[in-house]
Structures are given as structure tokens and as C-alpha cells.
Amino acid sequence: MIGGHAPLAVYVSLLAGLVTTVGILVVMRFRDWGRENTTYFACFAAGVLISVSFLHLVPESLALTPHAPMFLLTGYLAVYMLNRLFSSKVCDRLGNPAFAIGLIPMLGIGFHSFIDGIVYSVAFTVSTYTGALTALGMVLHEFPEGIVTYILLLKGGFGKKMAFWLAFLAAAVTTPLGALFSYTWVGTQDDMALGNLLALSAGALFYVGASHLLPMAEREPRKYSFIVLAVGVATAISIVFTKG
Image 1 (spheres, rainbow, N blue to C red):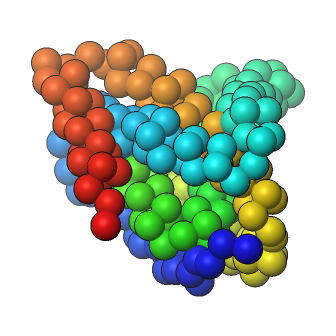
Image 2: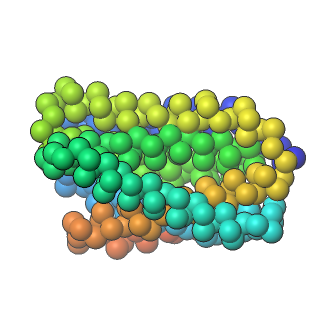
């Protein structure tokens, strides 16, 4: 079994929750600034996540298991289907479009953040380097995630205090919960099982970067968004190719 430092996943997940909370507090205090720059945060995080997935997580998983391609596809499609479930089926059953504007993304982000915690556990169990590299992109995307969750809840008709607490519980608290839930049993898996889990995580992360963050940025195009995306890609490349 690969030696890693799974408990670090819990500490990093707490950091991720803190970053999310800071994002919520910042947009509460400086709402215009938060809305103004959310696109840039999303672009940078997308560049890091996509690059880390292709350049490190995918090769690492392929080295551990021959089943990596199947799990990559499964991870991508699983997150896609979950997003579809929350955005269509659940929304339809609520029968309240205005309310669903905030609630449905909150539920989807909450589940996604819980999965983030599990991803931390898998990555740090593989190795500290893999965990740290994965955490780079993931922690960066927590900031705009908190902002987006809070703003959508406000648009859905929730008051400021209720929007804060719902965003905090859904986007910030769920990540440490996912890490706490998973890091003990993840650490007992053999190399092939870890490779499968890593590939599953890589597929999920690629979906988050390419199908969640980038489209969000494209809906609100900004002058320097492409440059910020390129900086995210360059950051990930520089870290991957200067390894130890």
C-alpha cells in the first residue's frame, strides 16, 4: 500500500472550509467586489484543477491500476448525473422556481463539497505530494464556491442571515465532514483500490473544472479571464514539473 498522510486531509479540508467561509463573509461585506471578481477566481481554479487532473492525477492512477480509464469516466459521469438530478428532478418536485434558484445549487454544492472531502482523503493517502497538489486547485475553487452559493440563495429570496448559514453549512462544513468520514477507511485500501479511487476523483475534478467552473466564467466574460485561466494552468504545470 502507498504510504501517505491521510490525517493531513482533515486539516486541509478544514482550511478549505475556512476559505469558503471567508468567501461568504467577503461577499457579504463587499458584495459588488465579490460579484465583480468571481469570474477570475473561477478561471484560475479551473486552470489549476484541469491541469492537475491531466498532468498528475491521471498518470498516477494509470500507474496504480489498469482500470483507471473506466473509473475516470465513471467519476466524470457520476458528478454530471448528480448535478442533473439536483437541477432538474429535485427542482421540478419543489414546484417553486424562485425558491429553487438558491436551494438547488445549495444542495448540489453541498454534496459536491462532501465529495471534495473524500477526494482529499484519497489524494493524501496516495502521497503527501499528490494531496498537496490536489489541494492547491481545490482550495482555490472553494472561495468562489462560497460566493456563488451565498449570492444564489439571496436571489432565491432568502434573507442575509439565513443565506449565510445555509451557504456555510452546505459549502464549508460539508468538506471537513467528507474528509472525517472517509480518511480512516481510505487508508486501509491497497494500491489498486487507491488507484481506482484516485481515477474516480480525477474524473470528478475534471468535471468541476471543465464543466462547472469554466461555463460559469463564460456566462460572465471578463477582459482578462483567459489570462487568469492561463496563469492557473501555468501554476499547475510549474508545480508538477518541479517536483522534488
